[in-house]
Image (cartoon, rainbow, N blue to C red; front, side, top):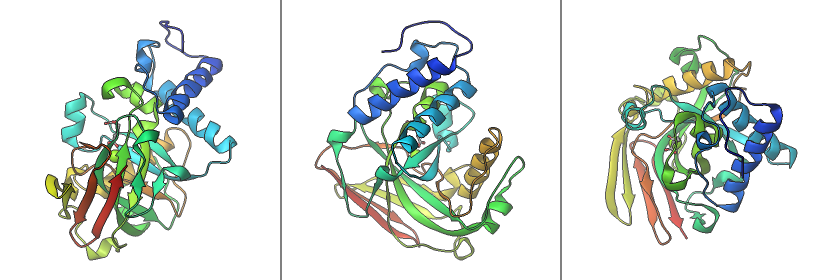
Length: 269
Ligand code: 0L1
Ligand code: MG
C-alpha cells in the first residue's frame, strides 16, 4: 500500500510505486481507495504519468496495446462527476472479448457496460488543433462496441486525477455489429438501445458524445499532443459512452442494438 503523504510533485519512484499499486488492483480484481487520498496534490500530468507507467509495465511483459478509449465524453456524465474535461485510457490485448463472449466477473471488481461507437483510422492524426473534419477524413470505418468499465476504486468513488491514473477504468470491450463508412451514416443521430436480460435499460444517440463521436477522437489526438504523442494510422478508438453505464453481475445477458450498425452482445459469468 502506498504511504499517505501530501505532495505537489511526485518522484519517478513514487509514480512507479503507484502504477504498480493500481495495476495490481486491476490484475487481482481487488479494490483500493482513490489515489488522491494518499497523494492529495496529484496533478493531471502526474496522473497521466501513472497511467503511462501502467501501460509501460504491461508492454514490458509482452502485452500489446490494441487501442485507446475516451471516457467521460458525455456532458451528462461530466456534470455528474463535476468535471469539465473527458479523459483517455489505453486498451490492452486481453481486454478484448469476442462478440457473444463471456465477461468473467471473477476477473473484475464491479463492472458496468457502456454503449459506444468505435473508430478505426487509416492515417496518422496529430495535434494540437486536430478537428472533426480531419478525423472523418482519416477514418477507415466505424464499428459498434461496448465497453466494460471497472474502476479499481472502492464503490466507484474517485476524482478526475485518480481515474486518469487508473487508466480511466478500462477493463474489457466487445466489438460486434458491422463496420460502416462515416459517409454512410449521420454519427449524431445513430440510435442505440441497450437491453439487459431482455429489458430495455438505456437509450441514446451518437450526439450524446461531445455532439459528435468524431469530436471525441479529435479531443484524444489533442490530448495526446500535450505529451508529444500522435494517434498512428490503424488505431482503434472507443469514443465514450452514448448511454449511462449499467452495472452487471453474473447471469446477465447484454444486447446493444445500434441503428444501421447491428448488435453487440455478451454474457456475464
Ligand atoms: O469510459 C468512461 O466513460 C468511464 C471513464 C471513467 C469514469 C468511470 O469509471 O465512470
Ligand atoms: Mg467508456
